[in-house]
Length: 239
Ligand SMILES: Cc1cc2nc3c(=O)[nH]c(=O)nc-3n(C[C@H](O)[C@H](O)[C@H](O)COP(=O)(O)OP(=O)(O)OC[C@H]3O[C@@H](n4cnc5c(N)ncnc54)[C@H](O)[C@@H]3O)c2cc1C
Image (cartoon, rainbow, N blue to C red; front, side, top):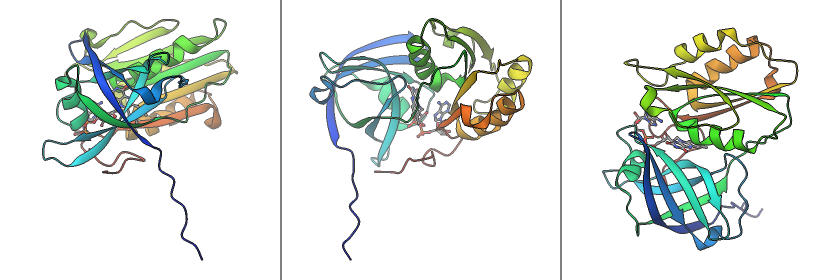
């Protein structure tokens, strides 16, 4: 019996071309890669960066492609500077000229037509929410409930009614504040939902959204990070 074929997506190289601070905790890192020239990016697709922890251990971290310029192979990645971690550190220290390896684009989110789209998440999902809502047809309505530390974390969002939920001194990653904020939603029959943020919080919020009337199979749930468990994100393994 022959061994199963394991297909890995190719590893590409990108060079950092520009850095911009969007908020005190969100930094845009623009990278350019010949491998991305002519590649069409779907809304909220991401790349998996190959990074190193402070110990030197190799790890992979995923970042949403906020904008793509396929004519020159450029991608904007908006990196939350949340504190410890290889991804956060890369965002805080990246400089033009730095080279980074990555795989992708990847991501399974499909935008299907609906009269009403509900987007729920935390800071790590702001790039995905912005990319999704910008891609929606004009006649489809979008409403977002987004948890951030405070008003300084808020980013401009087009084509969506945003309810910002401020965490203040509460720790990030719990479902409580968004659960309370979602209590008043009244989704129409033709509604879809997208939940992106801390893994266990998003699973808990799926129940809240289902209880409000959005069917199970109309809800997309994606864990973006795990409270206190850096390497246990669904689908993530140390490289
Ligand atoms: C498909 C996908 C797309 C994503 N897109 C983006 C994006 O566009 N921008 C973005 O900033 N993030 C994005 N993320 C989330 C990002 O990959 C994770 O936050 C990742 O854990 C960051 O890695 P790190 O090395 O900085 O921290 P880790 O080494 O993973 O964790 C170190 C510590 O920081 C905590 N931590 C990790 N992430 C956060 C956070 N977001 N908030 C608070 N505490 C945190 C952990 O619980 C742990 O205690 C995306 C994730 C996925 C799966």
